[in-house]
Length: 115
Length: 135
Image (cartoon, rainbow over all chains, first blue to last red; front, side, top):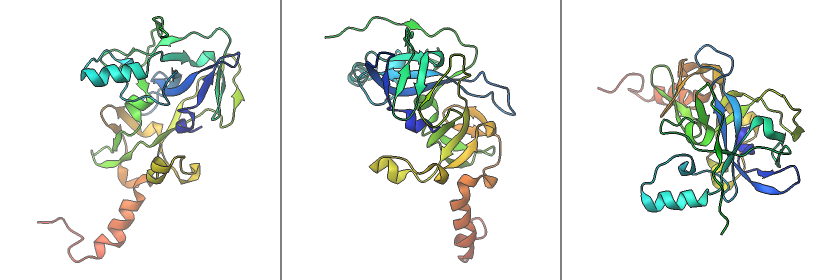
């Protein structure tokens, strides 16, 4: 699967209620050790209720400057959340459906770009 | 106006975190000598292509390759080139992901640089003085 096909895909919960679109995919480097770097495993998807994609990632960092831009972009991405791979029931280019009782996590990253 | 309740942070993960849009896509790719190779236009995953019901406990997809190719037109007009037109840089060749993506191999042998190599060998090399460094 090509990641670009997944970004922007509508996300629904198990009852078919639309939750937003896939704004980003979060990977973690804890896969099998390889020659140079560990394998990158899909940890989950960042879902944004109001926007098609993520832009500059203000909803994931504590940056507040430049203030008009930071405030505007944080508002545009309000309500974003992360769903883990285990909570995804169907994944595809048309739609992503989550499992019943999925958990929404905060998309925040720290200053080093880590959780 | 709808208010959003604060969410719990993601459970602690041992490995380094990479968000595709923030840390990977559109980054420049350098080879092991620091020579620019290409940019990351897309990423290929090991997940199935079509809409598939995922059984609980299925291992998560992994990144198999970074993709690059003729994406200028599709960036402007939408869509993406067919999968067969995209050039793959295997994830096992990636040495580091930072401001740029560094490879652990030479870019000279990668498929992604064939246009540049073809122009160098077939056109530039035939121009008088085109076979040596400028002085």
